[in-house]
Structure formats: C-alpha cells, structure tokens
Image (cartoon, rainbow, N blue to C red; front, side, top):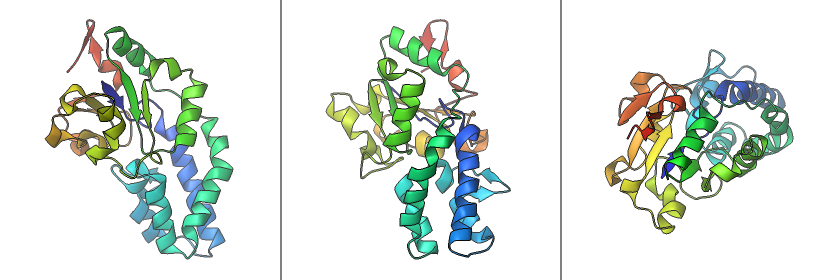
Length: 225
C-alpha cells in the first residue's frame, strides 16, 4: 500500500493554496476589522506571502484552521468555514498535477500496490481533485481531513486502511510535511519525503527516504522502498 499526501505531493500547492490563503486572510482581517495582523499570519504559517513548512496552513486540517480563526475573533471559525465553501471552487479550477503524479499511481498499480490518498484537505476538494484528473480508477482508498476525528501524524488516521486488512509494515507514506514523514514511524510504516511541496530537505530529515518528487518513486520497474 502506498499512501500519498495530496497537496505538494501529487498536486501543485502553489497554484491553489497560497493564493487562497492570502485571499482568506485579507478577507478575514477586513471582515473583523483587525488591520494587517502579522502575528496571526505567523501563527497559521503565512509569512512573506508564502505558506511555511510544517505550519498549520501547510499540514493542518480545516478544523485546525477554523479553530485558529475562532481564537482570533469571536465567530471567526464559522466565518472561515463559510468563506471556504463559498470561494474554494474558483481556486480548485487552477489545480495542476505535479510531474509524474499519474505515472506514479499507474506504475504502483501495475506492480500490484494499492494506492491511497491521505490528506488533511477536505473531502470536497479531494473529490474535486480526483474527478478533474480522472484518478478514481487509480486510487483505492481516500482519507480526507474531515473523514476522521484523527489527523496526521496520528497513526489512527489510517484506521480505514488497517480495518481493510493491511498492517502498518505493509504501508509506505509519501508526503511533503513532517505530518507525513512522522506518520506511523514507530509502528513500522516507511515514510518518503518529497521536495515538491512546502518543505525543504531539513524539514523532512526524519523520513526513511527523500526524493525530489513522486516521479522518482519508481526506477527500473521497482518501487524505491
């Protein structure tokens, strides 16, 4: 079983979430009359107009982000959820696959691996991703951020896969944040960090393997693990 993160691993992060984060924060500050709230932006991980490695925006669930907005302003969480539902679709139109994404899914399947997507993003945008790129036939399991009470790196987020009969040592996790490279490491899961998302090599140093992107997962007809 190969469990892929979505954003920054299979999907180009910069095309969607950086502009969405900027627009959301700008609108939040305007709605609640907060001015330019640099401290809050740093708290959620948006600095110098970029999403920071291993930050809440990079790897947190929608619930995590809404809770942060709620702490900053009364009603902020409900506002953030409503803003997301109202505006995310226009950003999803800009979705772009990273090099080798489809090829990796196909090659894994050809070699007998099952493919999973385990993401902190919502079910709504994950299904939009699968539909846009016709990936449903290549993906056997989908675990989105609002599907479980757990979130990465809690190993319990994989309960659906384990309940289907897989063991932790049969799973390799591929992702661009520490929530991916720490997922299940103490339980026998192999983790692979990719440099195609928000993190640099130093932030992925706990991974078992580090590659530039999913296009390097297979070589000579074999999975690198």
